[in-house]
Amino acid sequence: MSMTDPIADMLTRIRNANSIGRKQVDVPTSKVKIGIAEALKRSGYIRDFRLLDGAPNERVIRIDLKYGPDGENVINHITRYSKPGRRVYSGVSDLPRPLNGLGVAIVSTSRGILNDAEAREQNVGGEILATIW
Image 1 (cartoon, rainbow, N blue to C red):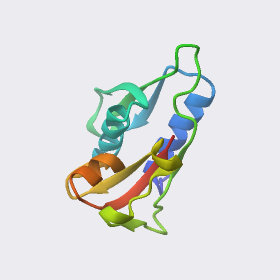
Image 2: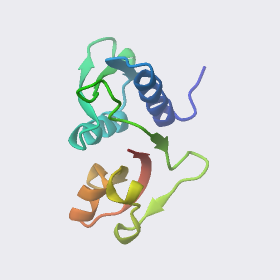
Image 3: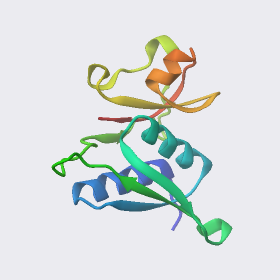
Image 4: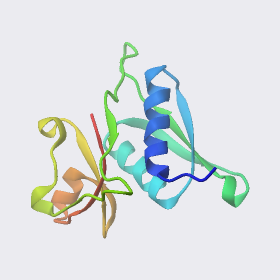
């Protein structure tokens, strides 16, 4: 089975694991997904992630999900924004501010995958991959 949108698959795996209170979730690896995991970690939505060894085409990213002190979800909403059939690009001035700045947009820029605040700081726009809050 070929996957048409591996990023949407990653976000769905995180959303599903989060909704049932799992501590970790495994996702097939790619450079973009590693970039997304790094942006989620910098934004404080996941505790950590690491690459697990395997055959080069079977490597996985293990993401440690984060919950509040009483087990409440840190991630309440995670959605694919730009899709393969409808790419969404944005200049730095038009970057979305999910939930009036309480959420984060993950943007693929010429300087790597950044959250919207980092993209504004570095004055770069790009493809909006996902929104999360």
